[in-house]
Image (tube, rainbow, N blue to C red; front, side, top):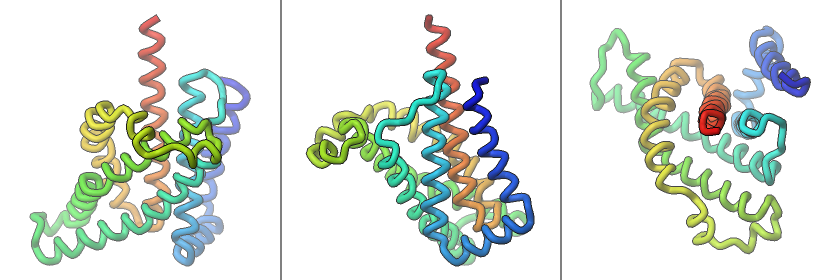
Length: 223
């Protein structure tokens, strides 16, 4: 472990402390209720971008800033705003479906079924679109080397051809959605709504770290 890794550990310890300590947790809940989109932007923007930095740390063995860091943060922040609305949309929609008996469930386990159905519907309907959008924005950032002047000159066809859509379909959509995101978001939707976007952002960090460890293990074994 390098000295710089201590800052990463301290970051998550601080985050845990802020959520556990009564006064800071209460302040978070008040601000989140009053300004959900601002908190959504900051939570996902900061955590998901930090997750990308950690992923590079694992793969390269040292801390390297991703190309176009500020643009990646802005994209993640925008997605955080979207998540706030989408989580509420699918949560409320699933409630309506259950109220009208349009989905089967056991009445004494409604909370679990509601969380599960919300996760399934969101991940099957929304997640592929969000993931594809994020792949495209990453392509623009990578191809432009993080420079806005170059980014504006890249056409959509070039960005689309840069993406490995086969891996996207076979792995990202067909494996991470059913085997990671649906179970993980089922747990997320069992939590109070104030914590759902935050936990979703932490889950993206966790998945990035897991995949990076797997990728590094493969590269080591191939030597």
